[in-house]
Length: 105
Image (cartoon, rainbow, N blue to C red; front, top):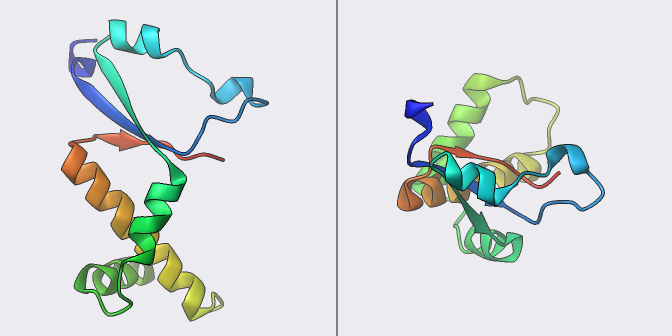
């Protein structure tokens, strides 16, 4: 339990009401030293929209995706969106000092 102290988890998007299995108790987590930092999807998508297709971090993320999975059948525009999403989340995690994230399903 000691390793969980001061653990910061990011949660972009709202928790879906109908999915009780993915809900959690903020109070119980805080009692264990785990804090949740939320992020609205509109804000996240705003960051993504401001990223240039030629941004160095976006190009690096595209390369990373290509090294991780075979993406030949995925349209380049979709891969670019995924890369920008990854860059935006990575940047948020670094700036907020988050160790993990969840995502709205």
